[in-house]
Image (cartoon, rainbow, N blue to C red; front, side, top):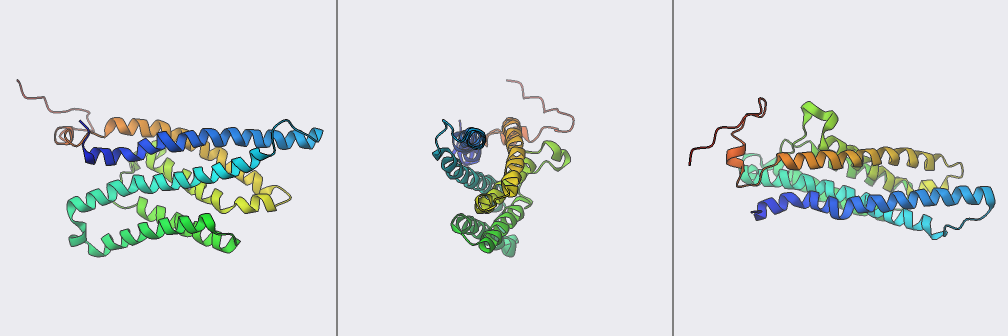
Length: 237
């Protein structure tokens, strides 16, 4: 049976499946249509694809970027604060505890301001602050990172995808102001890379769910020898 603690742990993958991955599919579809329309207009002067497709791509792309950053913050909040509460870190390490709380709040505020910022300098500042906050939170000792297998790590894939989404939010205006399309090319390349990491997120996230026991299973599962892949024999009935 799933308890409240387990439900909190499942919020991150649940929202990824319900919100983020459907948005990825929509954004990719709109991106293909936007590029197809641009090529048809350049070649023939017209296209059957409606002009609104570009505006919708930008709008839903912004939703996707914000959702990715938000779900990353949520995914890090659960292990950080649940383990801090369990170990009463506010008593053992009060400075670190309140520092992390402040960083978490500041990162959310920076993301909100980045969404609404228009001048280039403010977008650069708050994109940097948001990225720094995500990195600081992600490298807290409470967050599991699979450092020995970083090349198949859900954490590292997620960090790269999150940084790319923050960067995408920051350069939206440059894409439409650059007549030489250099920023558009950068956007296409980086978001194609992000798509590959999203696919990796789906694979590694599913794998990690298999390895995380429910709260009532933890006392037994954590007795297992993970190196030799052996668990203690159950007691006879």
